[in-house]
Image (cartoon, rainbow, N blue to C red; front, side, top):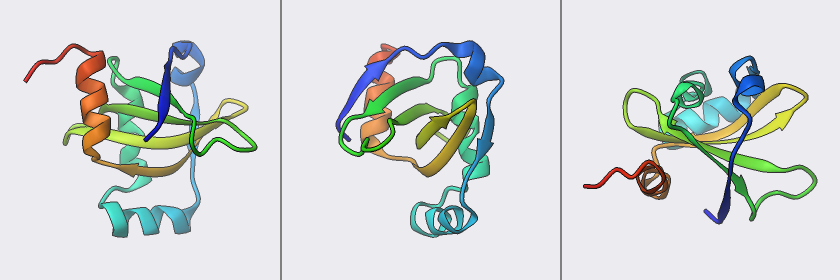
Length: 108
């Protein structure tokens, strides 16, 4: 996960709507065990980390939201389109957890 950490203005994100492709949601649940409806909870974590996905951003910028979603630290891949967060991937990935712990100064 190559990324660059960024600060995202919280006000629009707090009022954002979420959307996703139903087929991608089913595929993600099968592959990673996480549904996109649950992935929304990572955005509610006040200590979440937002990073730009520098590898997969092509025609539009893509991001990672890394936050506590109740069952652990969840990494969510998304785009931001006119006030709508479009989720297209999510999982409990070790690298996301390491970034979250580093940025929030959580020592194990």
